[in-house]
Image 1 (cartoon, helix red, strand yellow):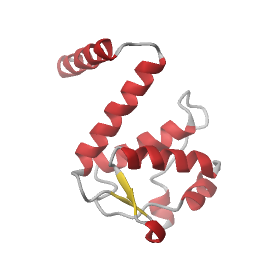
Image 2 (image 1 turned 45 degrees about the vertical axis):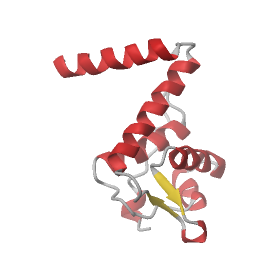
Image 3 (image 1 turned 180 degrees about the vertical axis):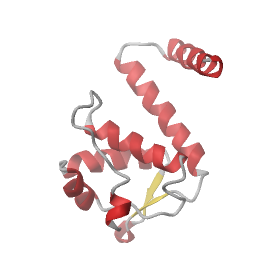
Image 4 (image 1 turned 90 degrees about the vertical axis):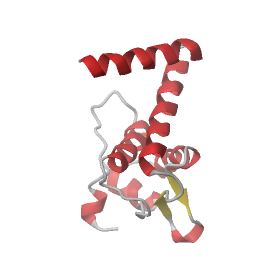
Amino acid sequence: MSDAALDLFVIDPGSPEPPYRQLHDGVVRAISQGRLAPGAKLPTVRGLAAHLGLAANTVASAYRALEATGVIEGRGRAGTFVSLGDDPVEAAARGIALGAVERLRALGVSDDRAAQILADAGRSAETG
């Protein structure tokens, strides 16, 4: 992967979001904005960790979460790629929704209340 492609991945050390979440959300954003196309090869865990100054386990955790939601797919020794199976934007949307649910659950918010909060936020964004 070229240096320009690596520049898609950025971590803000001053952000309140942990690096794992920043990386996860950054990949989802790059896909939804078309900066990472279906089938695009992602950097290796070690290569991206070195580029970002993160532990390899942090990058691996973000990749595992992205793979679990279908946003990316591991192809063994060939590497890790943006998923071809689903529409990557839909997969990215699922990833965002799952991330939001995880965060709301961590706050102790019930699933029913989380659904209401997300629906209210969507309506608010439409009128905002």
